[in-house]
Image 1: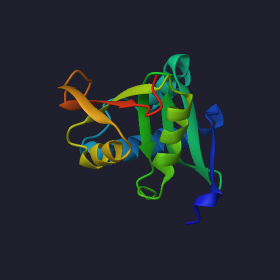
Image 2 (image 1 turned 135 degrees about the vertical axis):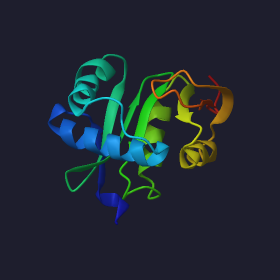
Image 3 (image 1 turned 90 degrees about the vertical axis):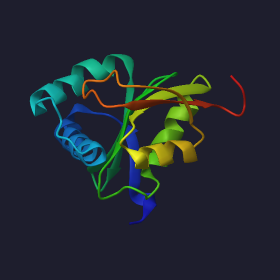
Image 4 (image 1 turned 180 degrees about the vertical axis):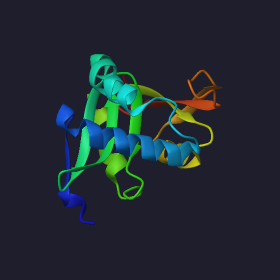
Length: 152
């Protein structure tokens, strides 16, 4: 794959089905369990709930959704990369956008079972600041924080 073909763009509802499919498949692979919400509920959440508090960017390859991130100035809510395109720098490109738009500090949660995500976030400067399991899946999770080296 040529990374120069990846286009990062703001989310548009015309990509909703592709985005939700990629999100669900990636999450299932990452945590080993099926999504607890229906596809219709997931679509509604993406288009009407998540967009209220978060900027959503997509990574597109030849017009197909291969990644997504939902973030604001202080938090990353979602970051998923298509299972066939992980390890190719797409996640880093999306993460860099969130860092650039941040207040200089970002927090996020990832599931404890998702060791690949933990390695990814730690590689990109995130440090563990907490643990818990207050999520719909009732799985142990880890809270990470990134602080810009340029100060806040």
